[in-house]
View 1 (cartoon, rainbow, N blue to C red):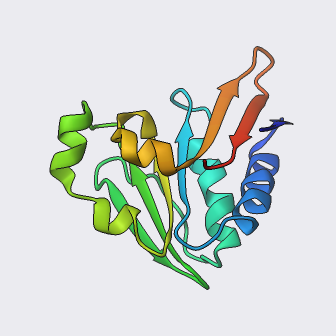
View 2 (view 1 turned 180 degrees about the vertical axis):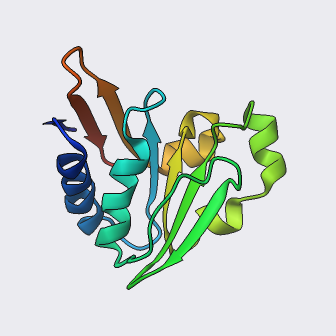
Length: 139
């Protein structure tokens, strides 16, 4: 487990980029934190590490964005998914368990088999507005 503190978006992206460089093909990353914590900002860093040059935006309403860089990259947002049954109805296993790097925001809404296979990133907003980022390796 590794802990970092960031005070702005550039630092959050940098930590995401450094983390993204360590991810193998097929990695699943679950990113959790409250609204506005910086989940998508962190995800931009991982996407940059995968060679994505397109603007990375939150797929809150479309659920999934696919990006092509040096590596294929999926960005999934489960904010609007109510529970595990809703998640299972989305039938995302072919995407999540592929050779792409997949980042899932609000991953606590995913099924246990996804969460159990994933790297975990938790972002907390501190009282001074800084962010605490905790990275945990996949099992």
